Amino acid sequence: MYDILIKRGKYPDFEAGTFIEGNVAIIGDKIVAIGDVEGDAKRVIDATGRVVSPGFIDIHMHEEQFLEDGEKYIISELMLLMGVTTALGGNCGVNRQDVKVFREVIERLGGAPINYMVLAGYNSERVKMGVGRHEPATDEQIEALTEKLRSEVEDGAYGISFGVEYDPGMPYEEVMKVLKGMPQEDLFVSMHYRDDSTGAIDSINEMISFAKESGKRFQISHLSSCSCMGQMEEAMPLINKAIAENPRLDYDTYPYNAFSTEIGTAVFEDGCFEQWGKGPEDLFMTSGKYKNQFCTMETFKEIRRDDPHVRLVAFVMNEHEIAEAIANPSCGMIGSDGGVNRNAGHPRTSGTFPRVLGKYVREDKVISLIDALRKMTWAPAKRLDLTQKGRIAVGCDADITIFDPETIKDGSTFENIFIKPVGIDAVIVNGQLAVDHNEIVNARAGEFMPGPYTKK
Image (tube, rainbow, N blue to C red; front, side, top):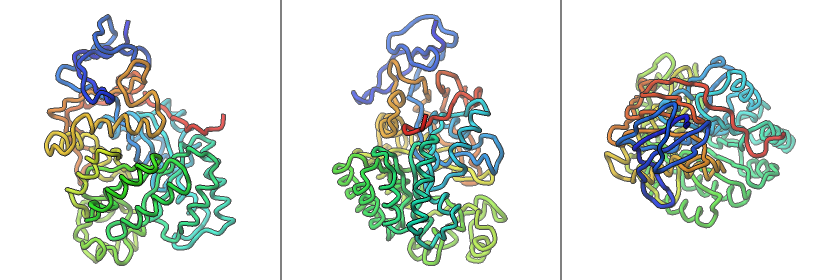
């Protein structure tokens, strides 16, 4: 007897580039049969007219803040509701807690809503060591920081991340010393660029150089917020050429024309408005005293001075360039860059994947359904060496998202990220039904997934 039998849906065959109509059978946490499959099952799901997709894999998000918010899940429940079954946190150089603490909390809570991986954030460790954001680390500090990252990787971190823009004093040489100090040749490294807009091309060239010189698997983070201010026409051929020459390089992107970060970061230092060709009226506060209000110069200066952890949404990006980054046939993956701070955030946190399928596939037709799903599932699975995920195939993990391609759509807004998407019938995590028609029915089916270099 099967545990779950999904009947009459269509699932993607990425190697053939087509969809196949058939059934999918699950026993335990594995797919055990596909195609013309019949038999008794404890649960039968009718997927007529639906796509039976591998669970979405979010290669770029920001995990729970257990030390600040308590031992509870917020962001990962939002991820689950939009069809994500596996996610990689710790991006942009930011760790919200040490990986050992993160792992222990998940185990103590008896699981998580999704399968969780996490990177070790260099910027967070830099701040803890007392290195100023506008100054380079000394050789002694770099050695100690590198040792800390090595320890985090041994404790279960999947790799490491950098947020170069957030610490402007971090020179090229400092990053390279850290990368060369990490002994794992195939280590995954993600990087938030040094500068956006008019600085985007120089930043991309720098990251291409980091990837080539270090030899690591290198991920350019959220390309859309780097070069969707008029630079994508030059950036995309540059990136495609670099990836063709170095397959260890790639990028992720999200489907919104606004980025989000804390108001106190270096992103909003003097000159930012001139660089973007925008003003404070294009910045929207999602937390704090002026929550859900656009800024004036007075409120911008006030909150930046008095409450630097308030999050802003900056509407500074061009829609047609976002579409180009999403639709690029050569490379690129979908990542949400989602996170929750003070119970607020950007709608990408809970709407990214349904938005791609609803807006960019069905409405705007800039990318096909199967290519979009590949960028959400198989491509990040291969990128992260998750050989049992990202496909509907016998022997693969039973992480599955069932959705209606005619109705799937994001619901979250800049005012309220907790509005659920529509069109998702079911989400299965590790063989367990976790979401049933927009309701979470099992928030502990996921687990912490240690990285490949975890010390036994």
